Structures are given as C-alpha cells and as structure tokens.
Image (cartoon, rainbow, N blue to C red; front, top):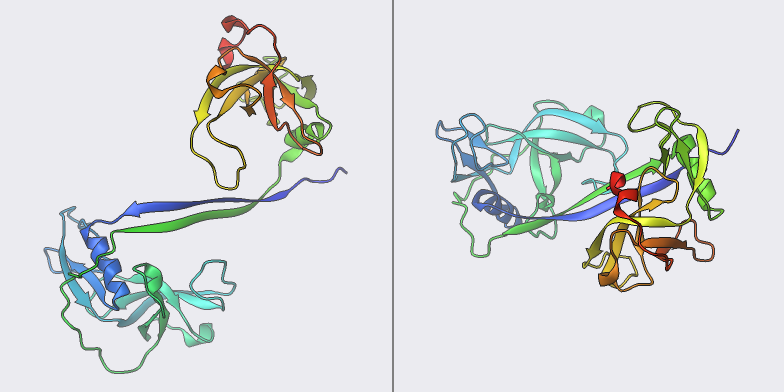
Length: 313
C-alpha cells in the first residue's frame, strides 16, 4: 500500500477592526478594571454590551456599570486546553451572569476539577496583571464566597479610549491530498506535471481532484501535460507578503499548460512585470531540490492566439 501523504498546515492572519462607542467603552473599562454593560429601553442590562437591541433592533448607548462578581448559569469542563486559550491547565468554560446584568458573559473559570464547578456557584473576575483594553484583561473567573462588591457608578467615559483591536485568527490542521493529488505531487518531485482526464468530456484537469468538476464523474487516467504553457490571466502584486522573499512588484498568473483543460497559478519571472500579458508563452524554472516550479519564464515563442485559451479564462 502506498504511503498516505499528509502535512501540517497553518492559516494565520491578524484581523484589525475599529470599535464603536459601546465596544470602545466596554474594552476601555476592562483596561481600567471596570465592567460595563448597556441598558435597553425596557430596562435590561446586556453584558457584553451591544450597540443594537437584539429584540427590537433599536440603537442603545446607555452604559451602566455592573459588578465583577456573578453567578454561573451553565458550564462545560475543558480537559485539554489548546494554544491561546485563557488557562494552560484544565478549566471550565462558564456563562456568568454578573450582578446587575441580565445576560451571561462567556469566559474561563479556574477550578481544581469538574467536581468543584456547579450551576449557581458564585464567582468573581480575576484581572490580568497587565491590561491593554481587550477581553483578555479578564484573566479568568475564580470561585468567590465574599460580600457584594460596591460599584463606583462609572458612566463609561474615560480619558484615553481604546478605539481599535487586533484579533489574531489562526487555523491549524493536517492536510491529506488523497490519491489524485498525491500522484500529482509525486510527479512534481520528478519535475513533471501530471493531470487526470475525464472519461466523459475528455478534459485534462491539473491539479487533479479525483473527479471532473464539470461532469462529476471519477477520473483515474493520468496524463502528463506541459511543461510549457500560456498565460491566460494575471495580476500584479504590490504588497510584500510576510516571510516571502520576493521583491514587489511581481506577477502571479493563471497558466494553461499545454494539454491541460484547466489553468493553474504560478509566479512569472525573467521578464519585467509590466511586460507580462495574456497569451505569453512560458515554461517552468525549477530550483535544485525544489518540489514544485519556482516560477515560470518566457519561452521566446510568439504569443498564443486568444482563441486557443479563451475557454480557460
């Protein structure tokens, strides 16, 4: 049985967003050790606050302080915390209705075990040692059996408001290419490009998916294509990507390899970016030990006629 290919992959990017007046006050309050909610027209206090009433859709701006103590309304035990979660040891996810609020705030509860957690238990906020104006300013909740906390009556106005946040988004997963793409990857290691032909429409798809995207039937007949091809469409990249050692501007293009029925994408090199054009004939350039073409360069042939590649635009 052939080896099953798999590889760990990570998709990660920072998401930057601005804050409206309600969220700005809420996060600034956390930085200052104050928990704020917002009061609706019918007297409900929502924590975390929102800018529009979820029942009536009316805009709400009436900020009100609530206590850093509250009651657990529901919970679930987390046996194996993951990277980036509030605590590094097992903890409980809890919904806490803070004193003075009518809705629950989701956060972590630091407890020695699931037997120590129950619905109705009293808890309080444990503040982070360093606070910057984010939900992580609440390090977690902890059990609490003390007296009620006296509020300051804060109205949500601060001298230095938090106006934006950066939220990192990350997805870690293991990718297995399957039979068709495993064969495609193996061919690339030999500096060849292999696709699969649809038994119905007879088109050759590169990279192969194991099924024809047009007819929906399984594919298995392997066909070597290229190595030369034609630029069908392209874009000029003017923003330098992190960890990518390529000077801007450069060009990424869709390239219809000779014999293929579907264009794949690749970087165009060996030519000024403003001379790349539709119909340009190109060939792959491989680096020593590379597992795929580093880029494609002009072959010097005359440009392909538009009629020969218009179906792949």
